[in-house]
Length: 203
Image (cartoon, rainbow, N blue to C red; front, side):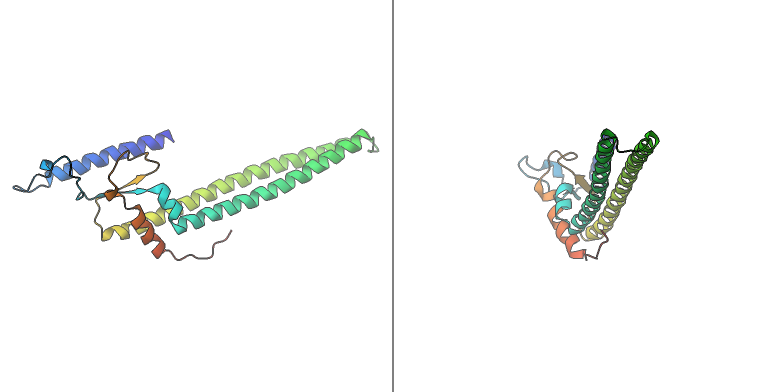
């Protein structure tokens, strides 16, 4: 996570440098100097914007649907594992009861039953690890799918807007302070939801 923050902050710094270079080198001779604006005025003509990702993910219907798919699959896997664990615990309790009551005809028969339960417990742990990894892989796949869709739609959205840079802000991690005029989150959410046509998803 720290590496991601370093990369993001580095990219932000580079973007700001590029923005200022473009701003000061693209000025034509005789053009008015915007730096002469009074301190109380806010510049609103900069071709930049930012998106509050937390708000977008909470309100973008496609993101909510994907999140529901992930939660549903996690609940399904967890329910199956809990059921198998409960069944194994019940067998283990029954084994201990029989052992205490000398219900096994021979010592070898008791050891066989113990080995069977140990093998079943090991198989359950392997199954749990495998299904956990599958859930993580599915979560990653759906996250990338959401990201690709968002970027694709954002490119189309920006054709009419003409922003040179669009920042991503999460819990004010990247943008500490910015005027609300540069926040396009709500407008983008409306656009995305209008373009989204829900399709039946496998759960």
